[in-house]
Length: 305
Image (cartoon, rainbow, N blue to C red; front, side, top):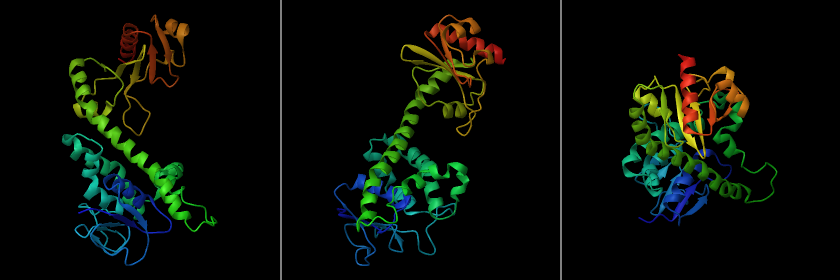
């Protein structure tokens, strides 16, 4: 069946139907987005996908609303928004369209649903308060996308629709960036796993380039690894390992005597020729050669032990 119309509600917009539109316009680029509350237009028919409007959820009829009672829920009882429904039904096709490897689609579909889609669903349904983000609540994605709506006294009769269409590519950039990053993590996994195996019992992990590595360390149970060495251009870096993505605390910090020093001062403090920089927060240091950075890594390990 050819999809000719993507139909959602008119007026002000929210993150859920905007992000749903990102998925659907990627899959059906020739379809027209229609924002309306006209009952004839939001009635299911061949060639239409209707979302966040219509008062029903019926995937066979291509209608994906969540405002009716009872609203659609996930298997664990958490509510869907239109974004969650669209992702559940079209997310795998969307990932395929972005050339995500077939072997990774299920895992990335689930990870994106958990980390990105579910919070949108919960916020849109009032199942989670924006206040959980504290002072950063105005910087959450739903808030930022909502800020793209027209101001209350915009006189244009097409202000809402114009703002929606202007916000769509911005929303698209966030979704695609998240998918790119998830796909990159899956690509990096084999490289990191191999490097962990090569490190053996050493507390120093050496990687061939910068890449996501912390989740692989966690999954491998490699708690003995304290620092990571990575080439960066002509230089080499020595970095700590965060305890989680929600904190700056590390398994181990670089030596306090190095904090904030550069060049000759750092060479003198560390005793390593070629040492160039250590961040004041002691989470990264830089040297001009592999030999120099590995020497710094050994010193850092000795100090921790």
